[in-house]
Length: 79
Image (cartoon, rainbow, N blue to C red; front, top):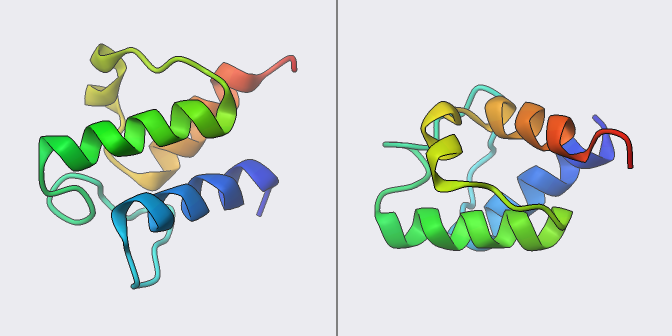
């Protein structure tokens, strides 16, 4: 697992208070994120952790943990 994978999962666990095991296929909506406030807190935490901006319209395409990992790797490429 890459450091981005680990950091994404640790951020999710910390921000959402998830105690169960999450994997790359874990769905956000309906499984991890149950309300808009939790979603926004997670978004802000990921932006802070990776020093990127994540536009709200991009959230619609981020359904699973793997989607978030891929998105962040794409946004952080070339650093």
